[in-house]
Length: 328
Length: 189
Image 1: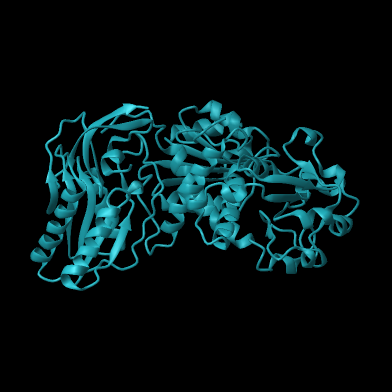
Image 2: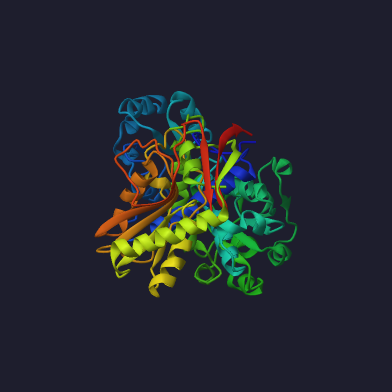
């Protein structure tokens, strides 16, 4: 188990201890305060260079990482793949070597292949690599911002603060993850984060959208979706990933919506305290009814807003020293 | 136990071993009363004064000074708390253990700011605090109050109000709280 991400790469949430995750959340609380100031910028990473490499399209994650880096006073090199040499057939290794030659301290990377971030971390061991989503593997910052959002809302309800509550509010919390678990890196990161913090996780999906090795995951598979909705304190919906061919895993989108979509009917039957989450971008009318997405118990915009402080925390910690330094 | 000394010496994995107590709880209380009177004397009135405590070691002293100023001048002086972790210049060595929040709810432009910390050592925390303050406006002036000045400055920074001057050697450690001041060493835990 890894107990801190200080001075480390962030490639996956699997293997991170409760302590390591809480550290990211606690530091993010300070950055929430920074984001509320008139001057939303601190000099913590002044002079550091962060390269943002998105080999796969993204709006919220890329903007959120770049905003985070700029609020820490880092310089951001942003590579738009459509206009880069990647289009001419340059290999991942050569692209990284080129960017490394410009002098960078960290790479924030999204790639369509599982394991791409791990690969890059081997090419450039002196650069901190932050995985912003790799294929079907992991999306660590999404998992972190999801648990951060849940802690924030639950702490508010209990009249305490996220910082004071630690991991306490996750103890025995019922989390239901619904939808395309098979193709979802978000599900993998979310599950690792919730389980590390002490929550109980169930998944609900058509058999074809569950990974073959689901038996070895630290989750239960829900037999009855409606019964599981009643059990859940948090419902985490996943996007049906049509670009990954998910369409061929279900008979039709309409059928998926009827059996596993969060329709208005189902939302009405939820306990009023149950939180609804979605990592975006949403397929309104497929995995979530458009009206459900706009209910007050849906935390979707809060999730996006929390992306910046969580990513500031991750950039700050991974680029900081490992604690080996001597005194002043 | 969290003091600016701890922040500066970065003792992750180190624990403080007290050798002797230099100030008692009463000594600390008396020093704070004297410092509060010096603040009033120097500034004539408390109009336009803000007290800003540095997280986390300076916080209790800043609260105590604000309460004493209210007694002396029957005027509430606004209190703010500042965490300077993100303004430090030694991030690459080891970042600060972080669990204290900044809360400054008023614009500092034109105000006289009294920064309050527990121990003044190299001066780097104060340098970081001066940078940070500029994000809340442009104070008319900034003054510095510390419970202990232990010397070894690395920057041209001096305190305006001092609880106690304590000459120390570099391998010693100081802990200053409302309950007293101790000298000792940091040992691996």
